[in-house]
Amino acid sequence: MIAIGRIAAALVSVVLGACAALPARDALGTLQAGAPADGEDRVIVIAIANPVAELPRLAGSTPGLYARRPRYVAGGDAQAQLAAVAREYGLQPLATWPIPALGVHCATFLIPPGVEREALLARLRSDPRVEIAQPLNRFDTLMAPAPPAYDDPYLPLQSGLQQLGVLQAHRCSRGQGLRIAVVDTGVDTAHPDLQGAATRSVNFVDHDEARFQRDLHGTEVAGVIAARPGNARGIVGIAPDAQLIALKACWQRDDGRAACNSFSLAQALSGAIDRSAQVINLSLGGPRDELLTRLVQAAQARGAVVVGAMPPGGARDGFPVGIPGVIAVGDGRGGELAAPMRDVLTLTPGGRYDFASGSSIAAAQVSGLAALLLERRPGLDAPTLERTLRSSGPNACRAIATVDAGCHCAGD
Image 1 (cartoon, rainbow, N blue to C red):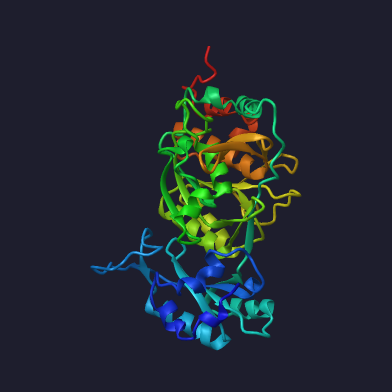
Image 2: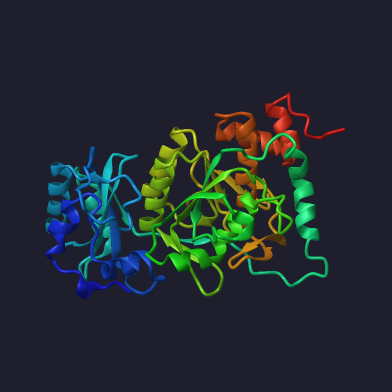
């Protein structure tokens, strides 16, 4: 999986010398395009403090994968320190990327053979030059297996919408203009029920735009949040007037689930911050991760509401639901916010529809509800929003009436 033979030692100066410079695409395959395999546990992430300055674009330059993001240059001090760290610890560079929101420059490195990872990380964490030293963690989306077919396929959808009070809430709010970042796999943005919903999409995994459109998990999540109504077909999303920011950080697996890692998620979260997302949906889960935690906290400090899916078993000590202020969503048995999470009709790639289950779907519904409330009360913070949803049932209509007495969405 890790293309060790293709990463020459000469990449040190290239990888660490330019802000958005990346190793050759084949060297990035293990971090971006490939499914997990043996050897990935030998990759670590290091962050060095790096005050950034914008890099002027050269005339005639050819944009690459990251051309849609702001371009920054690593300061001379950060560049020298990363190169020195690589030399002193015998690390082989793989990739580098800036995170302006945290004022750091990150790099991934391959651990030398025979070096024990945890001991190396302990040494790096005590090094005054190093802001963060951590493993390249793995994360999984949290979709349950598909249920069997039903005689009345729309009944689960209708009952879920009624349970959440969505159709009544649409009298007052449909998430108009709210920016919702879906950090996930790709999304079928050409789906008839998503026409005009995804205003921006960025692929942090690979260059395969056709694959982006075929990805299942992100399409299911996006459909729950923002499927367009009133087009004489399909389903109704919870926040159909919201603007989706589709940020692919996970690759689809053959079993229908998807996997991500610290490298891809850090870029996507930084992208969500750069694009001023007001709601960030994380229908995924994994271990604690310092880098990703700092990015979530940076998003929260900018007013973003972050919603995460509760992992199986109800543990809240990992990413993202272990981070204070993240709204954890599941079936409610672990004290998290409850939302419908079985047999929810949503979108699938190729203009199709199917049922989906799991806390991934529950989290998507709460992200949609958050957008409805934020339209009526801009600037509503996550703790207040969560308390309002809890006290309402959750029920979107009752919750909106709580934050905006001028809304009478219950009707006559």
